[in-house]
Image 1 (cartoon, rainbow, N blue to C red):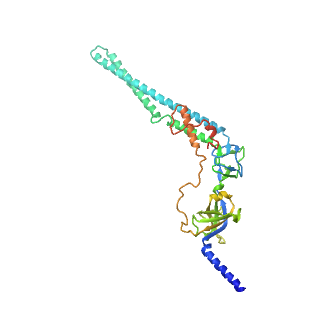
Image 2 (tube, helix red, strand yellow):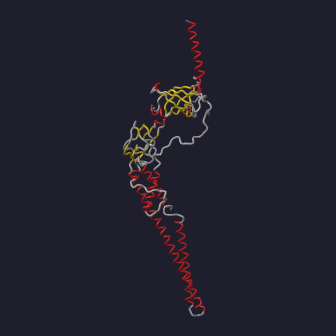
Length: 391
């Protein structure tokens, strides 16, 4: 019996040695791992009073859906004033262009008058030399030529001064019109930003805004968490980091699902330091007694989106992580910069285009000819712009 028991121990030891040589030594595991994700803060870009809140905590929202609406009265008044100023500037510049043509005609008239007085003087000079014409008449002719020349010079200077206001420009590219158009765009954006859309699709959390509250730009109102973009932060011990590389395969299990569900992912990157180094109160070991504590470094693990959609995870859930370290030929730390944006939203992309369309419509309505690249704005765009569909 003792020999049999001893033999079983020997076989178990050999079996574990084989398992360690083929599998275990290539696996780094930790249970100090938690689900992480983005908390997209919803903050206003303009000041205003909250009139409506479109979502509450635990609600699911889609990208572009209006979450908070602010009072539009002040923004609407400012927009109307800016649009009236733009219309006035367009008409003033058109008047400048028309006045230029009038002054050019005046210069041509003065030039004709000068030629006429010169011709009159040329006819009177021989008569005065022969005594057939009094010297006084000749002097009057000379004075008329001088007066015509002075009038022509004054008209030419007036034309030059006036051309400096309209030279090398058109109605729509005139600085006065461009300045007024910029004010319209600014007022239009402020008006449209009274409606706050959700930048991403996700779950609403940390709502702190209330109806009737006066909010300032940058005030956190709520957060939207895109649960389809979560990851896992696994905290590995110092001695476990040597064989870890970006791109290595990872198997994960969540406490919420137990061992029945297995997630798959890969190592995405490493933290720049240990968790204690970035703590609110970093440890100070230079004074007093010192006890060595094994440090841990966060390693980010990207999850399979298909598995994540089938078995959703919330931020903060505990995970068990096993990293397969067979592949060790990659860089210990990446040195290649990211070429594409990590995250982006197109919710706000159409606001500038709508503002340009409004400017073009005002210029056209007041006799200008905006560039062909700008389209006419739909008639109802001013009422639709703050809504999620217009965004």
